Each structure stands twice: as structure tokens, then as C-alpha cells.
Image (cartoon, rainbow, N blue to C red; front, side):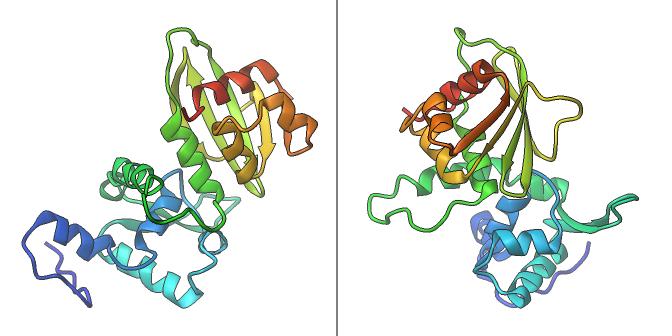
Length: 220
């Protein structure tokens, strides 16, 4: 077994304390959040976490690598970029981080402040997707949020995939919007048609499939 020397530990035998030894440092869980939907380069992580300086971000990544949460690999040609991704054990944090996010937004004291990033809004879309017997459609979606691209795949009304990257082939609906617009659609502040008319949402392909997606992710 590899011995890992962390700078600070709780010295508590509880599994919760051990988990916090691994991901309890500032920015660590947000790095995990931003890797849940797929690998990222260092510069992409830095763009998504502007409050973390490059030195702090690099140190947290080293810590997460040393504890087996994150690994580095080189993408095959022609890209050849070095990226960070979650290990199999690190990926087990997915439901934990998702649940923590849903818990956090219900705070009775702390208001939600700051901008919502592309990864956060996509995780919210995934978390809020609710299958329904009355909505059983199949569609591939490519969602553009700034320079980020994501794929969502619905099969017979079930969300089966949400990943970083573009659809292989032609999506049924290509959606382009900022996080605030997507958040507003989920909260029912406007319909797809209203967002398009306002110029803050662009849809190429099926408007019907797009409306079905946001109907399924509507926050009651």
C-alpha cells in the first residue's frame, strides 16, 4: 500500500474525517465537481475556477493525485494535450457532490451569490431531470455554454448520459445559452420560445425536443 503524507489530517478514525482529509481542503471538491462530466486541461480548470490562483490549483491537483482521486493522462493524437480526470474511486464522489449541491442551495441562511459555471449548470440539469410516463421521447442534445460543449442523451424518457464533448453525428437539438438563461428555464421563469424571442437562447434542430428537455428539468 502506498503511504500518502498529507500536510494536515484530523487524526480521527471516522470515515467522514478520512474523506475530509482527502477532499476537505479549499477548492478540492470544486475541482472534483468540474471533472465529473469529463477530463479537463489545467487551463480549462483554471478558467472554471478563477478564484483559485494557479499555484493553489496546481497544489490541490497534486494533492488529489497523490490520494488517488485524480490522475493525469495525455490525449491521443492529434490533440496530445495533458488532461486531468477522476479515477474510478474519484468518480464515486459523483452522487455525493450532486447531493451536496442540492443540499447547499436550500440553505436557510446563506444566499446564493456569484456566477454559475458551465459544469455547475449541467450538473443541475442532470440532477433535476425527472422521468415521466407521459414524456417518453428519445433525443441527443448538444449544449453550448460559452466555449464548453456537452452531450445529453435521453432514451425513452430516461436521461442516460451527460458528458463533456460534442455529439457524435448530428444532434436532434443543438442548444446555445448562458448559465443564467438555462437556470431561468429550469426555474420556469420563461419558456423556450420566450428565451429564443429574447435572444438569449439559440436552438438548431427540434424545438419540441428542446421543450421536452426543459419540461423534464423544471424545478417545482
